[in-house]
Length: 154
Image 1: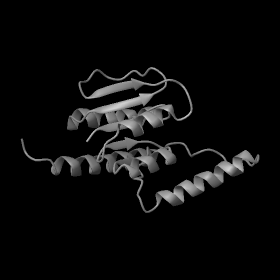
Image 2 (image 1 turned 60 degrees about the vertical axis):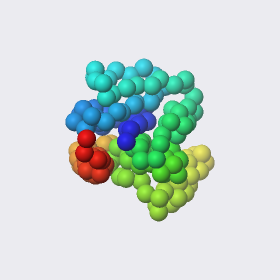
Image 3 (image 1 turned 60 degrees about the horizontal axis):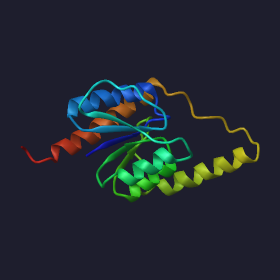
Image 4 (image 1 turned 180 degrees about the vertical axis):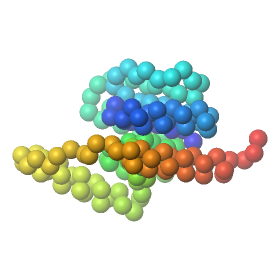
């Protein structure tokens, strides 16, 4: 399993959780962004800078992921593409996107986008709370532990 992070909008506190998880599990993690990133020195943590532009980082992640990889993103269209490639998608609030609910999430996202385009103020997402951080860490730990348990002993 490779961990991919849609890093441009990923909160710093979530990146810190991910850095610790990559070190603990010794799984490679790549943060993809259209700006330079500072990450702790580690053989397991890598960065990839892509050119600026709409969905450039998302497209690069989709191009590179394999079945069974994990993508950290709040971007619902990216999550849908990740699921279509039989990979996992987890948002920074700890919600694991699922095949049976992603269509509904896409529809709601498009509806809200239509409202915003027509001038209706919909507000942004709530501030990332302590309970969101805990939920993310718990779901990440569950996914990584399950993956590591299923690996053959070396």
